[in-house]
Amino acid sequence: LAERSSAVLTASRSLHPHITDAEAAYFKDLQRYESTCNKWDEKVTQLKKDATSSCDAMSAGAIQNGEVRCLVDLPTEKIDVCHKMLRGEAQLLKQLEQKVKESSDVVEKISKSMSRGETADTARLCLVGDKEN
Image (tube, rainbow, N blue to C red; front, side, top):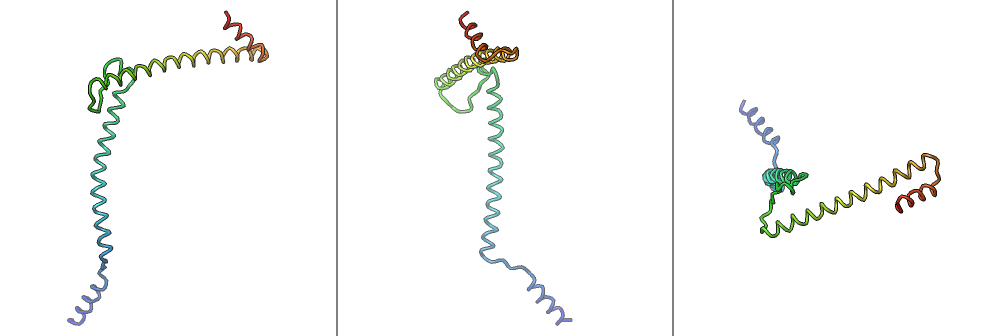
């Protein structure tokens, strides 16, 4: 029985996995990376939340309503400059919207002329005549 127990103990020791120093260092690195990633995960979640609230603050009409809140600590005069720039961009967008509307009206007129069987030259002449009136 003693010999048999000794043989089983020897066999179990040989089956027990042994890791090298390099493997042990690798597993420690993995544990360190995992803890670092867990910390970063919290930061990423917070950044997503901040970005969402920032996007919500910049919703349509937020500037005119005064609902815009700055997430960066800026002096009041710099915030005012940012608001003026945003208002200027809004005016430019309105002007561009008007130009697009005018262009689509012209395209619609040409399309109607072409659908009536008029030639492209005739459609252009109609448009030129409309501009002169």
